[in-house]
Length: 345
Ligand code: DAH
Image (cartoon, rainbow, N blue to C red; front, side):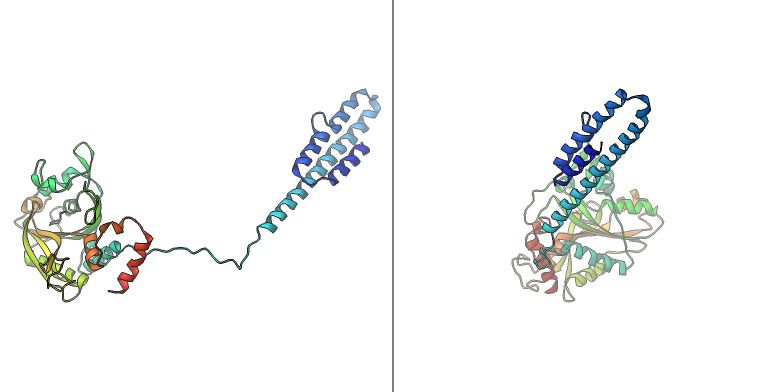
């Protein structure tokens, strides 16, 4: 047994790899290993010698196992040390440059408007992007088959009841239903909207609207005009002029297009305003009595105005951007210019 242990020690001393260690382990402790074979001899011994032999054999097993384990640790440590040596960090190497974009300017315009409206007592509310036809169209005075639905080519998700909202106007319905015909309403709702449009410089199948709604007693079109004036001046500067043009939306009566004076040519006429001196930025109007009624507000008692801005359009005008796609392609070369655009205002 002593011989076996000594030759094990010798063999272990001469190796440096886990593979050789495994071979040695098999040679000594494996099924047909030297130590295992030794234990076969016990049955040939006279009874009185078996006890001592057994004890020595156990010691041999333990010692061999320990020696092999120790060697294993030693080899692993050696491997780790070599690895650490090779992987040592060179603190003189230049760092990897992390490219940082800039906050989306559409988001900035939205936040800016939210803050302004909150300062005038408006709440910012949310609505689902996956909407019921009932809220997106029906209760906004756009029954099935209404020709004005064609202007909002719709992504239907399930049958003809569930759709991706084409406008943020359904939030008007949801908010009024919550008010139960008793509470005045004063909200804006920014959010994503979807239409089956082909993407180009001025269209996107997904875009952002900012809806506004105010319902109270004795509200008139002049309240809308005053509110729009404040918004326009806040976004485009104190010398920004506003005007209303008659329009048509099924959910407002009367309906208007709200224009701002062209901040580019200051009303002189240029290609941005198509030589009219004005640019349309929002559809709006007085909430249609039918809409008030289906949403639980008695039109004899209550009146209100509503408006809808296109957030990308506002951002494009404010930051002089002529292609809407820059907001969605996440091209860092473009978004990096957003900060500069902001700074130059
Ligand atoms: N929802 C309209 C659209 O997407 C915009 C709009 C027009 C919103 C008039 C309004 C409104 O709240 O009163 O074209």
